[in-house]
Length: 92
Image (cartoon, rainbow, N blue to C red; front, side):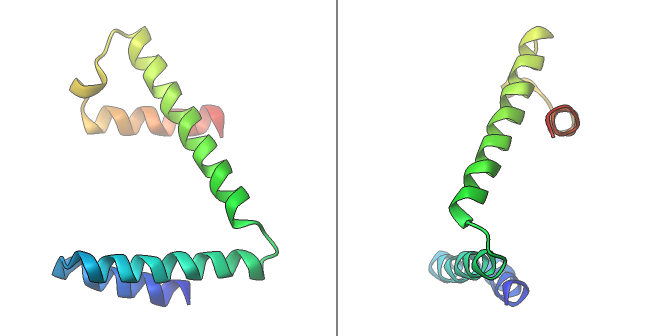
């Protein structure tokens, strides 16, 4: 069901209708939440942990840029991706 809902969301992205995109995104989120229930997992806990990982990785990038006297807003997307991957390796 998750794959089906994702494909439906993808279809709306090419059209650009925000209302339909919101509808399909809601269906996808609902399906993902339902999946966590079937896996005997807690969706809120999983999301909190994901947010924590994102925050730690972003802070890692910020600190790295600060240490190298680089400006976040002037850093290329390629460099940011390199740092993101480095943060994932370093922090998990």
